[in-house]
Image 1: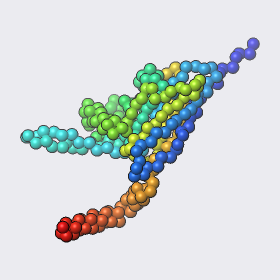
Image 2: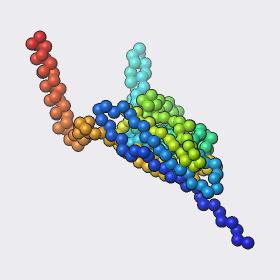
Image 3: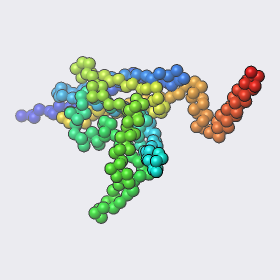
Image 4: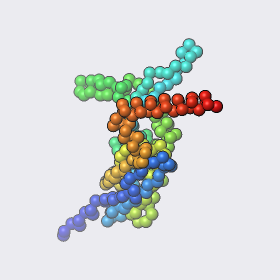
Length: 252
């Protein structure tokens, strides 16, 4: 007797309604729709997780300390590797989809997002086996990290939605990506993950570009390509504006 062939592995496919978002002076945010399909001949229960990351940006934080009755800033802590935008959407709560270790490995969810403070780290050799990275911040690292996440969430740049992916028909799903007004420009990466029995069995990656247009883009390119001339021109414009205001008040 010929054994029955094993069913083909499940697969996922997805696409964005827009792959480019143009930011002008009247930009009020945007909503991008991601839609896709799950292909599984055996119709096993499936979950979909969508993780969207924006370009990485360094974040510099200080903490207020009271010294001799005065409030002073602490030594700054610089976090790097933090995305300027982060959104995790799923068909149900992440902790119901996969284990802690799986979510941490995939960076799925704000709690599992890797944010490093490299200036506060050192490498040590322990047990004579391998080097390990130790944070000089100690347990305070989590306090500083929570401050980073809190600031990003307050600005609408970090978000997690455990009902953000909806199955609209058998195997067909839909997710919405809301970009706030302060969304950073650059290339965004959208990872679409298919989970079955707690394992990520298939994935797709799509990219989204957020770019400035019009006079904003011209000024942005000028400031980054020729910073010296941009700085001199800005200073000259400020002096001219000050002189014009002073002249107007003298006439009054």
